[in-house]
Each structure stands twice: as C-alpha cells, then as structure tokens.
Image (cartoon, rainbow, N blue to C red; front, side):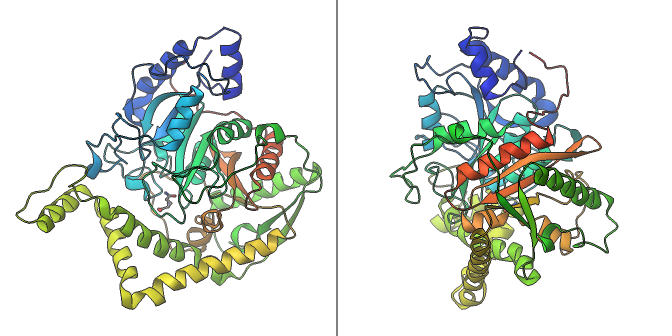
Length: 489
Ligand code: GLN
C-alpha cells in the first residue's frame, strides 16, 4: 500500500482517504527502522509525527521525506556525519526545511553522508558505511548516500541532498533513482553547511521526474538569506511537463562517452554502459530528439577533476574554519585557544578531510594562488564557455553518469585512467556552470541500475525536466526501487 509509492500516488491515496497522514508517517518510520541495520541510511530516525496537521494545499502535504544531515534542523541533531559535530543540535532551520514544514511534508529522518559532504563513496560518515539496496556488498556512492538509499529502498518517496561535484546525481545512478540538481540559485542554501560555496547546490532525490518537479516547485524562490538566489518565474515546473520534445537537440561528448573513447579497454561493464547508451539514444531519436556527437579538447576534460579538487578544497578549507570545537561540537583539550582548537580538529576530522584541508591550505597560500587556484578557475571558465557555446545550438548535453554499476567496497580504481579521470567525473560540469542537471535510470547490468544524465542551459530547468520525462518514458524504468526485504507496509 505505501512502500515504493511516488509522491503523486501517495497524494492520491491520502486525498481519497485511503491513507491518513499520520498512518503514512508511521509506515515510513517502520521501514526506516526495518532497513537501518542492513543499509544504514540514517543518522537520526524521527519517531514522532511532528507536523501538526497542516492545511496547506501543497502536493507535499502529508508526504514523508528524508533530509541529508548537513541541513540545519532546529532541535534535531545535525552532524554532517562528522565527529566534530557529533552532538550538535542547531537552533535554526535551513530554508528548505522551513519550506517543507510549511508545505506539510513530514520529516522521517536525517540521512548519512560522506563526512562534511566531501567524497563519493558513502563510506566515510562517522556512523558507518551506507550499503547499496541492490547489492549489500556494493557502495551506494555519495556524498548523499543515505538520501539515495532511503529513496531506493522505498522508505520515502523523496529526499533532499546537496550536490557540489555530483553528490546527488552520481549516487542516483548507482541507486536507480532520479537525482535533480536545479540551476545554481534556484533553491536557497541557507542552513546547508557550506562545503564549496561557488559549487554547492541543494538537490532532490525522487523516483520519477514528475516528483522531482513537484519538490523543486515547492523549494524554489528568492531568499534574502542566500545571496545567489533569484526570483524564479511563477510557472510551475510540474505543469510545464508536456512531453513535447520535438526538435529538441542534444549532444554527447565523444571523448566522454563515444563508442571509440575507450577502444583499448577490456572492461566489459564499460562496454555495456556505452552500448546501452547508444541504444537509448537510438530510441530517443525515433521519438523526435536530434542527438549528435561533438568533440571537445581532451586536455580540458582531463583537467576537470584536478580543477574541481583545487577549487573545492580551497573553498572547503575556508568554509570549515568555523569548526573549532569552540562554538560547536566536542571541545578539545589544551592550555591555549590554539591548542584547544588543534586538539578538537585533530580528533574531530577523519584523515580524508584533513588531507583536503591540507591541499586547500596549500592551494590558498599566497605563492601558490596564481598557479593553482586561479588556473583552476580558468579551466572552469574554459569548460563553461565551451558548453555555453554548444548550448547556443543544442538544448542539452547527455551522457552516462558513470562507466559502470556501483563499485564493490573492496574495488580499487585506476584514478588516472581515462575512465576515472573523465567519465567518472564529468558531472562536475553542471556545478562549474550552475547548469540544471538530472540523472535518471536507463539500464540495468545484472540487476544493478545505471543512470544517464541530462544537463541544460542555466534557468532552463523546465526544459531539462521535460526532456528527462520523455526519456524516462522511453527507458520504462520510472519508479523502480530495490524490492529487497519483506518490509512491505
Ligand atoms: N565526489 C565529489 C567529492 O568528492 C563531490 C562531492 C559533493 O558533490 N558534495 O568532493
């Protein structure tokens, strides 16, 4: 009756009186507990139905959801999955949480992330690893690991995550769900713990494109508390989903996902990803899309990941300087302020985070700024200019999100191979340009999902959603979830 239902389906059941709002919450709560030991989606599960019955006419009224644990929720533990915030209970609400409360949506739990949203494996949170609902021996990816797992398990129909490099759109690919990162500034980030402010976005996890549009409609809008937000048009994304894509033009980048890009590789999974991608493209063409291959200088594409690391580590080092153990989190020991902070930060961050802060500090050192930070910003500008130039002719870019299915926990990657340097990291283009970008499932390999991504022009979220909805129809994978366990309620 409840598990695996979309927002639209639950809305209907609630409106018809087949399910009560509190009953819906209880079912979600039951599922959250049922799957917690095996998959570890949550840092905190909320056991009390809090939202007073709201009279809001929002489509989200009475709909349960989960929220990544790097969004501030007043009175509810918010750890960012880091030891340095392990006891932190905020005193203010993030704008998205406030808006969802007002809409009458009910929060089921705060989800596990890679520590401070840095990482892509879902294995570095302070409460343990998140497992892939399609195969427990595999990662779900990250950093919005618990958000994706909770939707992929059918616990909640939607979750709110954050996406700085690919943190919603990449795990969405591994979890067979929809991951939508709207245009930079469409949704306020007030109360989202800053990682790299020029790249940080609020992003949405759902099981259908239409549900993603509904949540974006609820969350969008100018907020004086986040200076990059803008007044978006009143027109609802959901209402503009008309399925009319005739003449829409897409490109894919030959060096990222062309059939010949990895000629020398004997990776079977990669071959299947590329072939099935071409098959979907062929179907899309039959339905009216125009899709062409374009070429971009491989040197720029190879520089994407290093440029992302330079910019994000530099910004993260500065943003996280407030985590001293003095205002928040466990206090360090020592005689002086400096030694107290030193102790708190030494104990509070894992090695991975420390490595990023060391990199960030190095990149920001006066003598390195020109060579490292500013050059990374130039690479960013070069790629964004190139994509914008292509967007003069094309409505969007399409690509597989990854060269394979979710990796196993013990797999090692050859970080410098083409696949890892380009195909595994190209989603960051969406953050570099602030472009609206969405992942939807398009294929399964041995039962494990893989996703494709569509990225479009800034402020053309509606166009991107509409194209994605059409492709969702073509793949026939709308609404899938991992039907594991007997937790049906
Ligand atoms: N995986 C990327 C990283 O390691 C992206 C993280 C994110 O988008 N928050 O930083």
